[in-house]
Length: 345
Image (cartoon, rainbow, N blue to C red; front, side, top):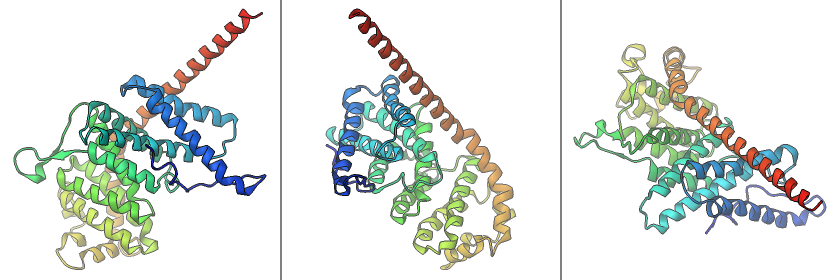
């Protein structure tokens, strides 16, 4: 049921008394993690908000215990493994249904996408939060949940995002945020699949205004700037086509025709990508840097404050609710224990 269980070797815990026992300790920890996942998916039934509040209490309990006790494994590792195995469970459910998505599957995936996005958004350093198993779980889920189709006119540029219900916008935005996190990862094998999906997304629907265009341009430019010093040609090979698509689709709404009319990616030449790489580097282009700082970042920040941060704030509220419900449960249990003790006095 969980093929990833014996494949993850990203963390090894040696025994202080006997280093050779590290493998046994690691196996024990993985078994305990599997037990937690079994409780999440077999012990808690349903896919509605109430069921996920209960599942959230399991994560809250881990953090509650971590405050007073030292874990053998980093809590980030434990959370990541729980998410990896949870995503595998969702995909198993999809395969069991013959590839047909059900309301239960969609609800569970929707909640998992939000938790994964929250997990990745807690820090700018995601190297220890993303593994091959993680990628193999989240990308297929995004593929089945982020569905785009034409609006019936046959005009691909006028495609719109299907909105099955009020949750869909949140799911699509959090999914996009996950892809952007993968795009910025130092491991090119993670960046590649994310870039393909972002590129497909950009071609499947129009940009929703200047703010969204600026948000995408800002994020991709940040990644490009971060690897400029590394001269990673393979990474650039994934990023520059995305940047070209964003520029092509937002050239007029972001007034690039006025602000930066000479941007190389607008020219249909064989050296356009290499020219842009030189053009956008801080040492060679004040024009591009000033355009980003003065015109793009304010719009991108407005988009983050209006569209991205509210979702993260909702997640904080959700986690607080999970924690409060967990504490209520602990209080009830302690009271019951006290009442039972009194019966024997």
